[in-house]
Image 1 (tube, rainbow, N blue to C red):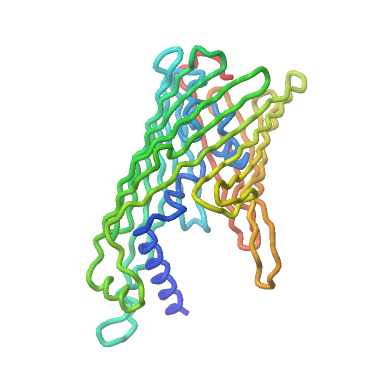
Image 2: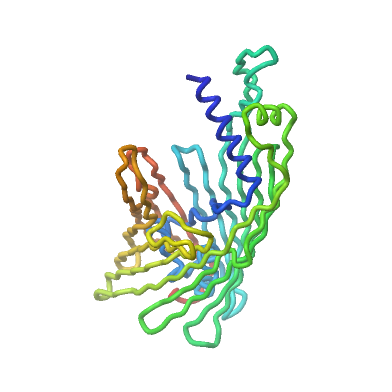
Amino acid sequence: MRRKIALLVLVVLTISLGGYAQAPKYSNEFLNIGVGARALGMSNSYITTVNDVTAGYWNPAGLANIGNQYQGAYMHSEYFAGIAKYDYGAIATRLDSSSVLGLSFVRFGVENIPNTTELIDANGNIDYNRITYFSAVDFALLVSYAKTLKIKGLRVGASAKIIRRRIGDFAGAWGFGLDAGAQYDYKKWKFAAMARDITSTFNAWSYNLPDDMKQVFQATGNDIPTNSVEITLPKLLLGTARKFDFGKKISLLAEANFDATFDGKRNVLISSKAVSVDPHVGLEAGFMNIVFLRGGIGNYQSYTDATGKTVHTIQPNVGVGVKIKYVYIDYAFTNIGNQSVALYSNVFSVKVDINKKRKLN
């Protein structure tokens, strides 16, 4: 059994390193997970109504709606029964009455991955003492700027991204990209557009594989990765939202987002070679602007099971939040689209207003 596990890990490592040497359709996917339990509870339907420090990630234009001099946020979540750990932190400061500067940091890491490339010694014997361990960690730093324009209800913003990715001592990459977004309020409606990786994001990979690992790759029929550039193509996100008030105590916020990609046909609800669109919606019910209940659906998938039957699935998310003076505490229960394999995560985040100046929108 242990031998099978060790060989499986070797195959996964080989495929991962080989994939990074190409220009894949899916790259920098750790930046698509999402940040903040409020947004995750609404199935990432958030680019239109985001008005806090997390806007540096979701839509930098939303930073212009921060109602205080400083605001900070932190989030921690774990995936795959705690194997992968995801951390996010951000801070924003108002520069003047119309502009805001923000810094965001994202880390996604898997620790203690077994390296089984030296599992078999020179005599052909399996020796588990020869297993070593390494980490695969992705980092991103976002520097964001937002400004309220003279056109009533219009805000714009941009985020410059610096990316660092490492796979043990075997491989590493540096990357750079740019996001840009806008928000527009019209009467009771809100609209938004967000262009991610608008210039395309380029990750320059370099490899430092030891000779024994190269020999294992050759023996197992795998290509030896070489220094290369990985490209993340642009994505366009569109959103609309409206808030409904029921008296002075109860409110309901509804938002719909449409994520459009242009890199070929994807397994989403609206799929074509020219453009694929992944819609998702979220709701937030509030009581006295203190307690919040959230929910959303998204991540539509269609696949064929072992019997040949076509199966359609969606991913529901739920969450709650509470505001205590200048502190916001949020929780989300996410990734529950396939409960049979327990792919769910508990996400907690906290946000703090400092030196409050004016009322949030």
